[in-house]
Amino acid sequence: MFNLKDVARTIEFGNDDKHGPLPLLLLLLTVVTGVVDAVSFLKLGRVFVANMTGNVVFLGFAVADATDFSIPTSVVAIAAFLAGALAGGRLALRVGRHRGRYLAVATLTETALVGAAFVTSMLPLGPNGEIVRYALIVLLALAMGLQNATARHLGVPSLTTTVLTLTLAGLAADSHFAGGKQSQTGRKLATVGAMFVGAAVGAILVLNAGVGAALALTLALLVLTSIAAYQQSTSSANWAAEAS
Image (cartoon, rainbow, N blue to C red):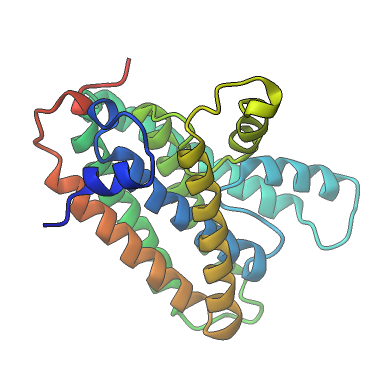
């Protein structure tokens, strides 16, 4: 029978007793991040809905009047992301004592937001498509802010589902060449690979089949994650307790 913990152990996700199936589920959400950022960057203007470091840099470019960068687009994405993260923090106060239940509720909410984005992407565009474009940015950034806050609260090392800078730095700084202990190498490599795969597949879908196809894949991944998290929402295992 398929067992999330066995899969996690196979790809070296470390102490399963401490985090249970959470690493594998967060890995799926990392793929989601790659897909939605492919959608936002390639079709919604030069903006990210998940990678806020990039948006702050883009905002700086826009302030300096660099071409193809927009102050309103970056500001809207950042504001929506913060609102989603705020919602994730509030949700943690309510159900965060059980990590499985928290992830289940968070991913179900994220699924609803991405579902709304999918429906929005099917709407006929106006004269310049700006209303639909901004609606998609807001919905997807809300979802990614919520996802980021969720990953932060769950506290699984090297699995923020969005930021890879520290993960890549850790791969080098913790390596044997640097005198480190090569901590969680498999998890870090899997995280980088998940983001790469999500971005590549998302780009292929966006460029060849459209935004709707990429968002449909995102929905499928979120539904899968939500079902798996729901199955763990009543677990009494040690990993389910709130991260210290």
